[in-house]
Image 1 (tube, rainbow, N blue to C red):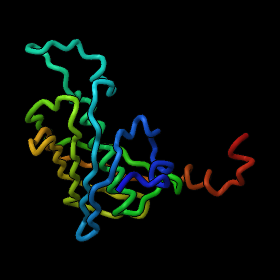
Image 2: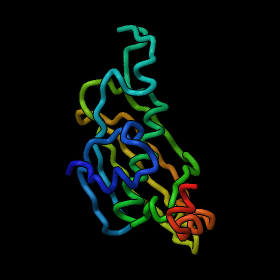
Image 3: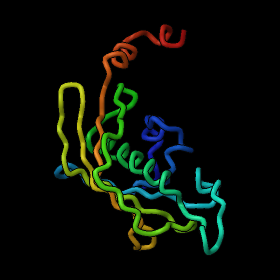
Length: 171
């Protein structure tokens, strides 16, 4: 399904930083699984700045950008599976990369398919801890595999700010 405008509006990144164009699957059974699609092209952040060479350094989706995308697909999981809304004061931070394996280069052109499977979800009074297995593929080829965690928090200051009248927030 194309990106829901409400999801895009609630995301802690602008669309240019979200870099997804479609949510392909949402499975809320168990701890949840989501699959999203990321278009790839020469103008992607970091990718556009590569000093590419067809043999020594072919243009590819930057590994740093792929690590960022682990967070973006985590945002999809938090929104659609955990029900956490940035507009309600929730924000996520990457906690730990237990394992990150870059298995192949992803040349611009075909989209990346980003799969995020939650393997652990612990709900605390003011936070949610989640651990994810991530698999990014392009044209059926595995590009990246990760085992990572994130902490979703709702800081008291954010909750207090949400409770203030709108006039106070804009001052």
